[in-house]
Image (cartoon, rainbow, N blue to C red; front, side):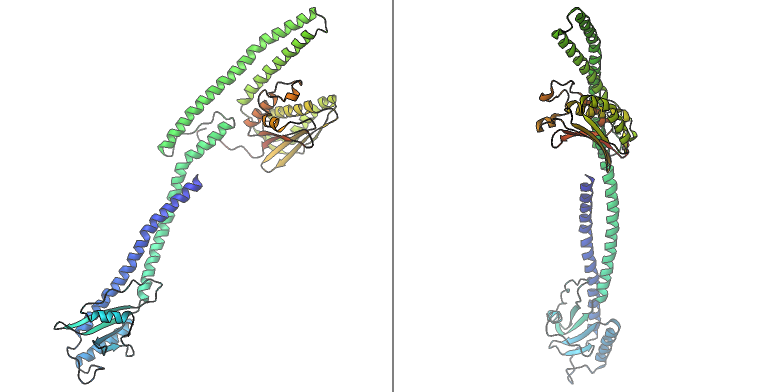
Length: 471
């Protein structure tokens, strides 16, 4: 969620900064150019004041009086100091004075347009905006009016390098300000995103803890928006109710199993006493005795399952190879008595596990493998370390399960229709799954070729993550 929310905030803030920065940059460029245009207008007004009223008759190409000489010197000095070409031209384009000497009024282009506009008795329009990447010159033309008539036009043709440099410098300052503002905005977005999403991450971690069996986990209802704090409080109330219901269920199953065990034990004792009064080969007594013992086993397994689903795992660094080898050795005699070859490949491998619960889970898995494997077939147990987990793989040479049965294996009280006559309550693998889940482990089932079942017990090799704040 943070990977989506943070870019969205950054894009929005970047859009806002661009919406502010672009008009500011355009305004800066326009202000720089307007300043130059105003200066040129002032300059043309000053030169217009030096223009003689009448055109000399001696020569159309120049001015011979003192005032005209002063105008030529002013224009020459103006060009030498500022590099701006300037001239005063009569209505027929003839120059009154100009600098440099080789510059004349152009016959076309912006200079000609400005001259023609000034002949109409008004100053030329402001030139089009010049941007830093354009090497354009600014032309400003002002009319010289005497007695209501335009007798000449003052034209200035300015280079724009300095103006463009100032504009670019201003843009760089704006850009630096935008970058600084963007960095501050990104920092603020990170803080805001962290503030908003921290309760969500805590809620997600707590939900995972509860889903994996740590029902005591709770969310600290502190920090974040008020809506998320209310959500945290509601979540804690829900977790309390769920824990209470599950505890009541566990207590009921445990109490019922315990309460039924005593009368069942008394009933089995009476059956044994009754059997003493009947012939030894009485089939009905044998059948009742078998069913009674099976019912007692179911009650014991129900009690074990109730305890396993709510037990806290005592995780520690455990040598999975040594523990598995120990369980293989313990089941060796049972496998040998049935004619099943039980082998183990158990190299030293460490992982985080509860030794007692893992031993119980392995006992249930190996017991099932030996129980359903026919004589002369093999049961193989192998320990494998892979990345962040360690696995114990148990494969057998039994009849295996169909795809539909494979999807249901491990469910409570479920047993394959083909194995109903084999001793068991159908709770052993459910107990194993509950025991492993309490420690962050898992158990999975798949086909083993050419026939049989492959059971994989997985435990983590990395240290368990600490609970979220408030847990």
